[in-house]
Image 1 (tube, rainbow, N blue to C red):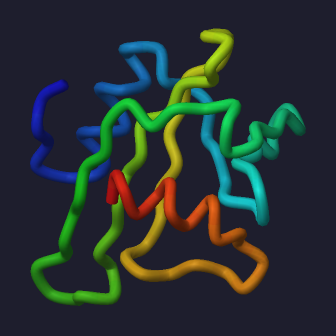
Image 2 (image 1 turned 180 degrees about the vertical axis):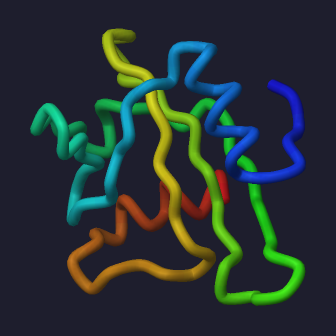
Length: 101
């Protein structure tokens, strides 16, 4: 996949490539709030990731994860700030994200 200059360009291009689901991080899974679909750590793969750093505010730095379910039925993205992991995020999920982030 190509490199991107900013998060908005990446999201637009990835959506055109079929990565249309917006995932959110949960304790032991990623979840699509629109459909209620969740995937445990072993049910999805991170196929790529991109780091974005704000020029003016380091607090706005983020990682965009490009995700596919292992059954191939769902593709989407998860946006996460650098180093921000909620208290309810499992160690297994954190390890998976760190490998790619």
